[in-house]
Length: 263
Ligand SMILES: Nc1ncnc2c1ncn2[C@@H]1O[C@H](COP(=O)(O)OP(=O)(O)OP(=O)(O)O)[C@@H](O)[C@H]1O
Ligand SMILES: [Mg+2]
Image (cartoon, rainbow, N blue to C red; front, side):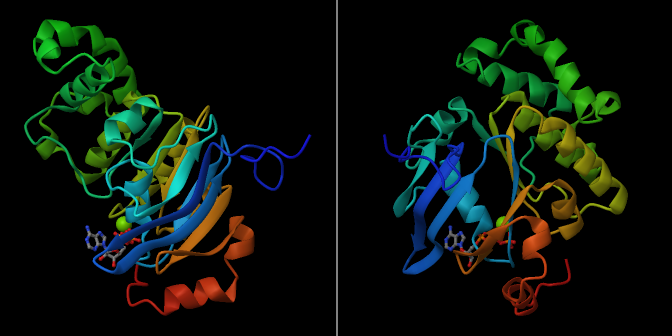
């Protein structure tokens, strides 16, 4: 018997196996032939200078953009590339967004009840009544508690402080109970206290799942990530454990060569 063709070099099958993934925008390759193995149960960080293609890669993995070329295989060998975001979510891969995308007038509790209802696959119309949504109240409360929003569950989202909005976004991704959770800059724009709280939260919610994390804060990466992939100009520059990649001259040049090293 030969080696499992879907396996990686060390013989374990990655939960996500990305090969030759590319996305072109009018002749410009934002993601350019990316190969990536994400180990099941790991926290895998994706770093790189602004414009490196990190968010575009997330959009390709979650169906918000269609790849120009390449493949994304789940460990059960199902192909994700080219499927819709809804189909990919149903297959257990969910994400949070770099930019906040909440409904201003809905409360965190309402956001979560709707997210939980959408996970049932029954239509929006069916769940429009408050009574139907009430069946998700218990789980919504648990999620609020988990992300530290228990006291803010009833206020309109647009009046939440920034850190709480980001916490709600995390809870919304968690509501789908994904096997693979993709977080796009979960600590962006946060003060030290919120960064620490968010790191602790990610450490808690990684149990039983795989987390792919785009993160500019290297302390957070050092704290959480088992492996780090550095992207530059849409390509993988280097990959390895944080302790190995952080002193690599190529990584230092990639960051210093960029004009946005102030983050
Ligand atoms: N829809 C689009 N149309 C054209 N170009 C795009 C589009 N989306 C992204 N790009 C370009 O692709 C490149 C990668 O962008 P992307 O947002 O993926 O970078 P990033 O690594 O997430 O950067 P940041 O750290 O600033 O969030 C950039 O040059 C960007 O301008
Ligand atoms: Mg981005």
